[in-house]
Image (cartoon, rainbow, N blue to C red; front, side, top):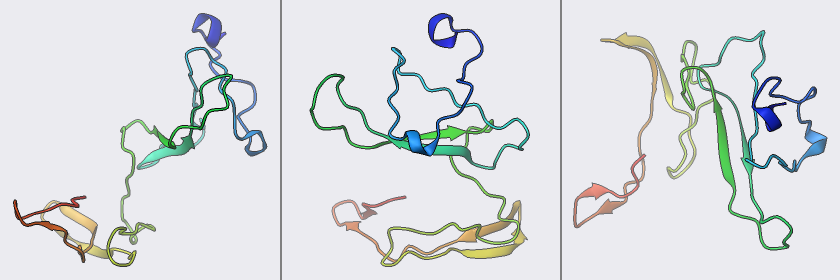
Length: 135
C-alpha cells in the first residue's frame, strides 16, 4: 500500500531479520520505513542506526563508501544520556588512547550530573593558533 499509494500500512508484516542482510531495497524512491516499538519509552538518543552502501543497479561496479543512518527519537537527538549513575559507556576517541570520561555526580549551577574529559592531543595550526582537529 505505502509503495503504491502512500497509505498505511507502511511496513511489511515482519521486520528485516539479520539473516536477510545485506537487504536489497527495491522501492523505486529508495524508502525504508522504521516503526519503533509501541511499548517502549523513547531513548535519550537515537532508536537505532545502521550502515549502508549503494551500487548502481545491474552493474558490477564497486560499492560506494559506507553511509550511516541514525533513526532519531522524538527529540531528534542522535545521542544522549542522563548520566544519572555514571558515564553510561561513553568513551573519548581520538586522544592518544581511548578513555572513559570522568563522571561528575554533583551540580554546578544549572549543570547537573555530567561527564568531562581532557584533550590530550592538540594539532595546532601555527598560522591561526587554533586546533585543527576540533570536536
